[in-house]
Length: 197
View 1 (tube, rainbow, N blue to C red):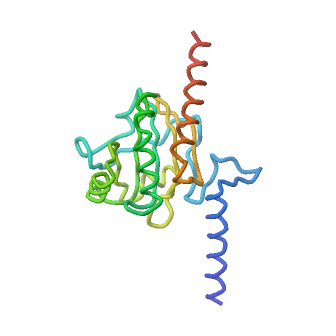
View 2: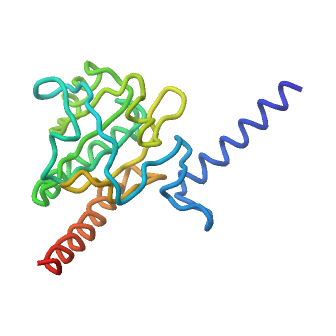
View 3: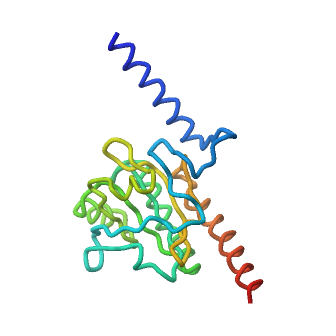
């Protein structure tokens, strides 16, 4: 009996994992409701604040440090794994394009600061990776499952408002998807500010 219960749980988890990976959202569920990793923060409201240790600068980074800049906050499972390495390399490859658009890239996983430092050195990463070792920030962003962060990405505007959520990320093309959506969001933001003045 216990074997059947575990098997059923595994099948359900596999189903939801597949749906998340395929970025499938049933018509009656909005992407701001629930993800496999938990409740997502609502779009068009202030993003959850955080301060976490990092391998760069003075050792800690807060979301507030990026006020006045767009932020691409991406969560990933583990340093040195194939998907996470590809995703980080793609963000690094496109980093000049993000900087041109007043945007900062920030990665978050449950790995330690030392692991992040080694990962950045080995991959030539020039953006910060934050150590969410207890998963508190990942949970606040609906991106925590068990003992690691899920592969989710959030775009936050210069005022700290969450503008976009990406679930079911494909590491090979994700940076380009984020960059394209960022351009759309910035264009909309500019048009709104021009209409208000």
